[in-house]
Length: 314
Ligand code: NCD
Image (cartoon, rainbow, N blue to C red):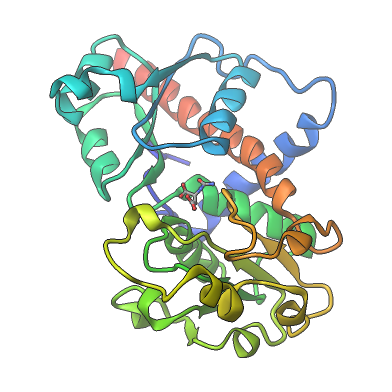
């Protein structure tokens, strides 16, 4: 697989998605054993640049890199020269001059990570750019679904809540669509993105109807940091209509799984009891698969990079 960067799900072929998931599946199994550490990325320098808050994504990229033997460095972007007026590209060029092998980047602006990838000569991995893409999140969601449902095609999947501001929804829509699933988008009209019809998903404004007979319920946080005005009347009203509780979930298939990328706002988009119900909720598995998927993605990118560097030296 000749991937140089992982900037989004959009450019990936279904076969490439499958290859990443197959490798991640192996890492997931190995991560549960005591022989989880290896030297696959020994000698590689990985720099994590997070211009936006993150708990699980940043931690799992760091753990994934360390588990594979990379030299991992986290830059606290809040304390960096960006605060002194340096541009994103200048910061990236500065780091690039130190010859890292991989930059893992999260940025509040859609397209910023693609731009950065054009300026540097190391591999770039998108850890979320604005409301555009979050490819490793979609991959870890896909792996979680595949492991719990035994397949990743012909499933009925409802993505619910703040679709408009969500890169998670966007990357998932693209990935799950490529794998031939039937996708429903459930939420108020104000939280549906423009051009929604292009995705070939069914849109529901009524949660009971939207969840009818689905195999997977994927909940999303209200992304207030990307809202500039009143998108919902009140959190109470939102919870009443769109918060996932046992009554609403009873419309889905009896074995439907509940997912959430985190961070979760209990009592806003999801009832705490549902989130904690281990017979339905796979939220902790999603976090576990996150490490495995990031190990697989970095393994593939670094293998390709090594090969390209060797060819260039010949
Ligand atoms: C998401 C993100 O940052 O896009 N979180 C994550 O990466 N797990 C979703 C969110 O912020 O709500």
